[in-house]
Length: 129
Image 1 (cartoon, rainbow, N blue to C red):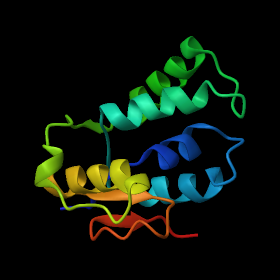
Image 2: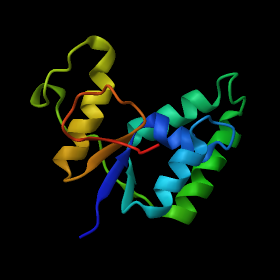
Image 3: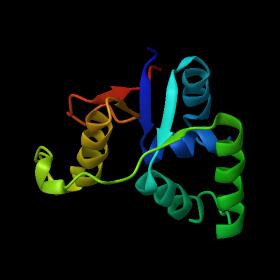
Image 4: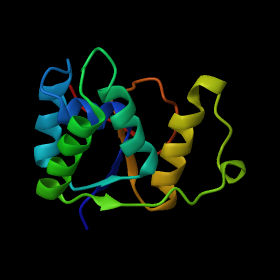
């Protein structure tokens, strides 16, 4: 069975926006990775950040980019159905979403694909440079 990866928000953004500093890194990895997955948090995060000045997309444009990528890559969609109190406590409040996503990935037998070298969760998989 090939590896399965839930994409974190930063990885999804890097994959879908050519102007992202890690686009080539994420794209190279995506082309050789196993099954990819998204969840409501990663999709919402993508839309939220894509509409900020750094990317400047409208909500409609960001939704279209996500929709087009999903049509081509056909990622697995997993629900955010894991209770937060049934996950490991993060080392700091700033890591709550990261730890939740990593725990969710682990719950579904996946790794969390991330660009963050300092996540500190056993289910985190840092995309190689």
